[in-house]
Length: 251
Image (cartoon, rainbow, N blue to C red; front, side, top):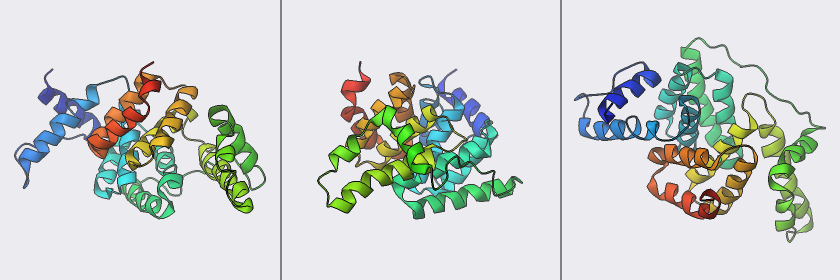
C-alpha cells in the first residue's frame, strides 16, 4: 500500500470514517497532516494501535489541545481500549502538568464517555490507603529509581529535604503509579512521553528512559513511542528527547 491507502485504512480503524479530501477551509493542510500521521508515522515501528492512541491522548492532554483530545478518546474506544485504561492515562498526567490542566483533560474525556453511554464514575482503581501510600510508592519507586531524589535534594532546608522526596514517592508512585488499569511497563513508557512533550525536562526524560527499560520496555519501543508523539509535540521536543538519552537508546 502507498501512504494514501494506508491513511484511509488507519483512519477507518481509528475514527470509523474517511480522511478529508477537499472539504473544509484548509484541505491542503489536512492532507499533509493526515498522510504524514496516519499514512507514515502510524506504520513505523512495533507499537500497536492501543498504545499509540494512549500516547496520542497523553500528548494532547499535556498540550491542552482538548478538541483533538476528544476525537482521540473516541478513537481509543474504537480500537478496543477500555474506559479505565483511557482514564488512567489521563489521570497519570497530573503530577507532571498539575491538577488544573488534568481536570480540563478529564472533563473532555468524560464528555466523550457520556456521549457513548458510559456510566460515570468508573470503578475505583485505588490500591493504597492513607496509611500505605508511602510504603507502596517506595516499593514501586526503588527498583526503577533507587533513592536518588532524596540524595539529590538533601541540601534543601530541613522540612523540605524530607518532604520533597516523600511527596514524589507518595503522589506519583503511591497515588498514581499504584493504581490498576495500566501495567507498570505502559505507565513508564507514557511517562517518558509526558516528559518529552513538556519540552524542558531533559534530565527527567533521561532518568525515565532508564526506568522504562527497567520496567520492561525495549529501546525500540521507547524510540517508537517518541516518534509517534512527534507530530503532536513537534520535532524540536522529539529531537531533544532523543539527544538527551542517545547513549542509552543506541546500545
